[in-house]
Length: 493
Image 1 (cartoon, rainbow, N blue to C red):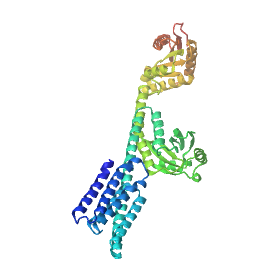
Image 2: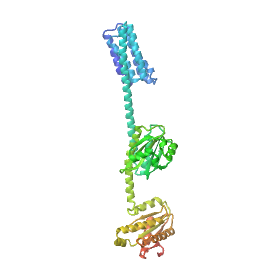
Image 3: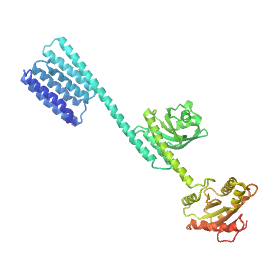
Image 4: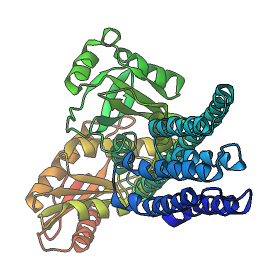
């Protein structure tokens, strides 16, 4: 690459040396040979100096040396009025392209001085010298200014291109990470972490991000990430944060400085604790409705427009990933949930027990609603649904947190009581029967039949459910409104 840079300049210099021999001819052979010798040294220096890693002003030796070669070349012609005078622009162009502006200015000054001195030695008039120096100085200045402006513009363009590529690559990583999960909580946590990083300049440790949910005028921080570890979690009234309130009300990205005087007391304490002075708030819209707001805060300086645009880009990707995750969650919930009672269905019951059992002893209750068909025939299906909802509520009022109740058929329910045995199951059955008697439906308590079976730590849940079902049908045949323990005598209601 270095040879490629030097070659055009060397080629022009060699053509100039040859042309000086041809026309009008060399009048001073020693001066011409000296010019050739200096030119050879200059070419060698131009190739070697950049490889040595020296400071750029040291590398001015090569273009400065070429000015000496030119002075000797002019001496060999006994004149500076030949076409060779334009060669002064060669070292000026080189320095303008590959050196700093101050170095270009210094070389331009030296080149003009060389022209003045050589013109004076050739006995040119002061007016001619002044005119030549002025014109060549202005021409060189235009070249220097134009070249450096072009380098600056190209440098900015390259920086912007590299930044755009980095931005696109980072957003690609964000998109892959956000779409790698169908868990809404993980999507939110990932987006918050990525926003804290991608909205920061490389190496910055002054960014934090959080995800806020808004409900009934209250803001709750659902997830947060801080590069300095300050994650506090909080809830505050939306009215205490005017910029966030604007983003929520208008559903458009908002950014700006946090003025403590305009914040509420809770927000003032949070801002002081976190050391946050600036931020951006980007609404997250899913299904046409506001799901939350991604907040990215700055401590040391305001977020630039470019950083805010990155946050917006993250949110757009997040909206798609979150919509997919929520749709998946809804379909999973629908597949495992009874639509009438919102209890687990049979598939949901099996999944919940599988997740929570962990070799724990259980008690299983199979419950059947007696006379549901008669209620539907006599009062309509709405009354039957009302009865089922009442039975579900009564059963749920008896169970502990963590126990499971499910609707596993049209008029059938099942309960799983954890860390219990058959005696604990019997106790729960008795309480369920009492709850039914205390919650009459259309003037009459709902009638149910219950079968109870214990499940040891190593026993099969399916076998125990079948035993509880068999016991339940025995209780039903006996008239209902009673329970039956599998393998034991029938207990009257």
